[in-house]
Length: 316
Image 1 (tube, helix red, strand yellow):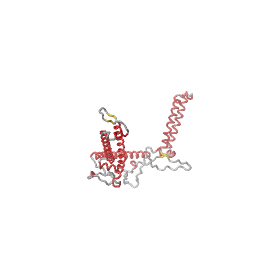
Image 2 (spheres, helix red, strand yellow):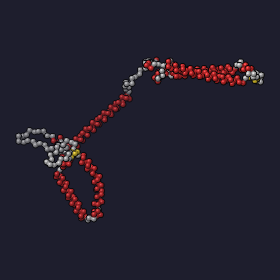
Image 3 (cartoon, one colour):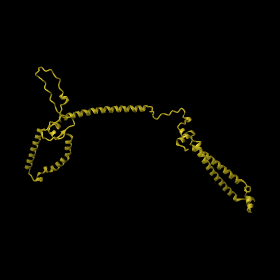
Image 4 (cartoon, helix red, strand yellow):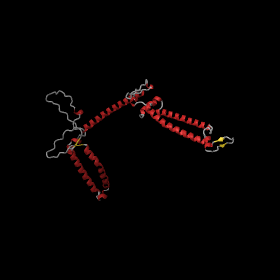
């Protein structure tokens, strides 16, 4: 059974070290003991007499006369080399054996000793868990003086903003009502309110009804010319008079439509005016006319313009 991260965390918290650390310590201890044993074997073999180790018998069997040192002692120079090679082979063999068998030990211990069934991991309670209060993540944090002060400031600013928005709403409502009154043809409530009826002194005297006062800009949408052009406002307007029979009716258009059209024509009018100014400044260069003819044309244009304006004014 493979170790899960939750199980490893629980065992580490219990042992104060990871399970692999325990296995590694055991293997390192065994390797250290193997190294000490090999060193002891090597030291014992090197300190022993080579003749006792069988080098003299091998030399006699091979009919080899051994060398002697200055004191006449028999010397076997190949003994040290063979001992070192043998000790190295022994060390390699022991290390391979330890690695092979302790790998099996590691697998066995991790699977069967240092393990907790997965279904019990969530139910294990360690000793240092006693009398430990863990707050619920869904529980709100306890209020602090700083948090209360911050909430109080937020509430105060919200109330100020609410009051400012209400005042702005009232101002906008009054402004819209005033603008609608200017465009409306209905009488104003302040001017059309009927005065308090007085008892007539005689049955023959009857108070005359109040005369309605249209708005200052009501002519923009209530005159016959406005109805002819199909101009209306967003405010509630009385229905226009019925057109004569056979006359074509034009759908009502908001006042913004002709206004936007007029504003769109202003750049073209400015260009025409810019191109006409040099010709008006020098009429002789433009057409070769003298000042008298230019003055006559201007007088004629002014007269015709005044006549058209007067006619439209009477029609409105």
